[in-house]
Length: 68
Image (cartoon, rainbow, N blue to C red; front, top):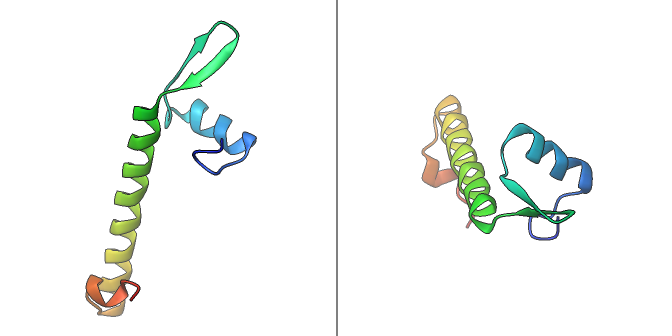
């Protein structure tokens, strides 16, 4: 939860939806770093696509939307 900066409910939502991969080690659930990195990459791609879409609707270039 700390690495993702999400609460317990959101963490379980991500696990149940398949966004994050996990395994059991004894009675402890482990989430792989590879899975967390993949989640971040997907989120960044989605955000980039969302910004490009917004720019197209407003007639702006994606570079104009980047924070300075």
